Each structure stands twice: as C-alpha cells, then as structure tokens.
Image 1 (cartoon, helix red, strand yellow):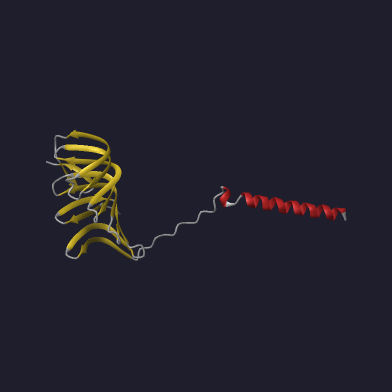
Image 2 (cartoon, rainbow, N blue to C red):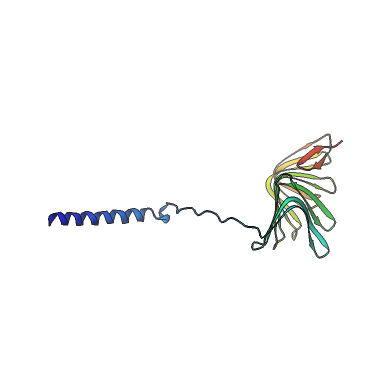
Length: 199
C-alpha cells in the first residue's frame, strides 16, 4: 500500500515538472516557435528573352529588354530579372528618357513604382550618368530616389555621396549626405554592365 502511495506521489511530481517546463518553453517566454518555411511565390505568367513595352494611353511609361519577366497577378507586380545579361530598362516621362542597366526590376501595378536593384548604371539624354546599387522611380511624383551610396557624373564633374533625389532627366539632382566631388579629364559613356571610357 505504501509502495502504491509513493508511485502516486512520484507521478504527480512528474506531471507538475512537465507542466512547469511546458510553461517555461512557451513562445511568449522567449523561446521562438518553430519557423515555418516561406511560401514560394509562383508567377502566373512568365516570359523569356523578351522586349516589353508598358503604355498608359498614348504615353510610353517604360520598356525592358530582359532574360526573364514574371507577372504575379495576385500581388499586381511584375518582376524583371537578369539570368545571364543585365536588364536594359528605359524609363519615360513626357520628353525625358532615362536608360538603365541593372540586375533586377520590380514594377508595382497599382502605384506604378519601379524598383531597380543591383549594379545600376543609368544615363539621361543629356549624358548625365548615375551609378548606385538600387533606385526607385515614382512616376506620380516624377522622382528618382535612393538611400544607397551614389555616384553622379556630369561633364567631367564626379559627385559621390549617400542617398539621392532627382528628376528623370537628372538635371535636378540632390545628394543627401557625405558629398565628395572631383573632376575627371575624360568623358565616359554607358554600356551594358557598367561604364566604359569614351574615345
């Protein structure tokens, strides 16, 4: 009888210990829950080796030459990706044109915002060039913006800094901080994958 009593007491103590440890290990006590695997995005439409033009009425908004373009209809987003060669992305606003080479672009179908990401080199019709890692184009505000390190080249003047706001023609460029400027003797021109010296 005494033996059964001890077994009962031991069982109760074990249950209390288990309950205590389960309470200690709750997510709100600092122990994270098991991480769920992210849901993979699936494009509803996919193109390879394509030239695509986006129009709004009679106005050309942008055009792209790319290895791959994916359309995600539920997110109202278009993703343009580099597989082998950089994307050539041309942006338009009224009479202004900006030609860009970059690794990836994402277009928000609702706001029309365009995010250009990875090894970006851009040139305006006036020959002004920008190099940075990423930039966002807001067509409704008519503004280019980045918070990354940026280099602007214009008629031999080289300006470097952190962050930029500009119009599409790159005629009104504002470097936000850490500005350093210098002069270069030779002109440069845009080429796929970056800049090369002109003749």
